[in-house]
Amino acid sequence: MNWCISTQAHQYLCLHAAAIEKNGFAAIMPAPPGSGKSTLCAGLVSRGWRLLSDELTLISLTDGLIVPLGRPISLKNESLDVIRQFVPGAVLNRVTHDTSKGSVSHMKVPVSHVNRLNDQARAGWVIFPKYVPGAGAELTARSKANSMLELGRNAFNYTVLGLAGFEMLADVVSASDCYDFTYSRLDDAVSVFDKLAEGRRA
Image (cartoon, rainbow, N blue to C red; front, side, top):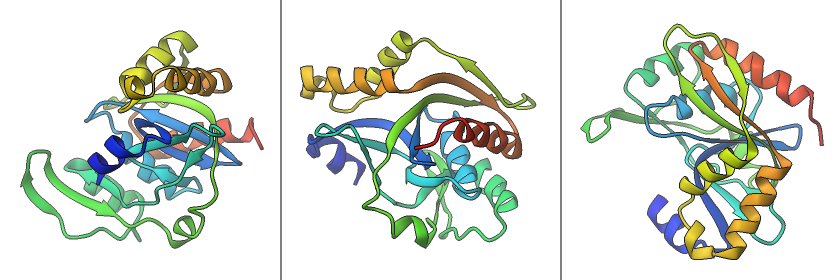
């Protein structure tokens, strides 16, 4: 499914990043495997943030809005127990073991999120998350120039779109506050993200 979208849906700038929304603005979260991106996404979605995607951020070339996908959140290995403890009512499908990524399952998206698949969101933040054992939750400002370069590296169709992709990426970064984010506890991470949302409302 990811391959089909990333190689065919060129009406969007397609980023390898999670995206969540609150108060009308989206946080785009690109990160390499093992960074805790999907775990963070699942934790925030269970605490009032709306899921747009845990894997592919689709940005419309027409108006710059992020289009929700609403698919289940993919979780792996230690993340499974972390989310089971953090979200006691989480619905996870049967765990598949011994995959190339280890033990994998998917968390069901709340029905209220699925019902809002037509509600797009505007970029408000670009946040590069990283799970660091024992670390406090900390945001560190990141330059827009560096953030744009890194987002370009995380775009599936950036070179395919050419100038249109460059201009859209520049618009997204210009409109967003850019940060690096380290965390170890989901409760602390939620607190930090909620403060960001309080400071920016549609």
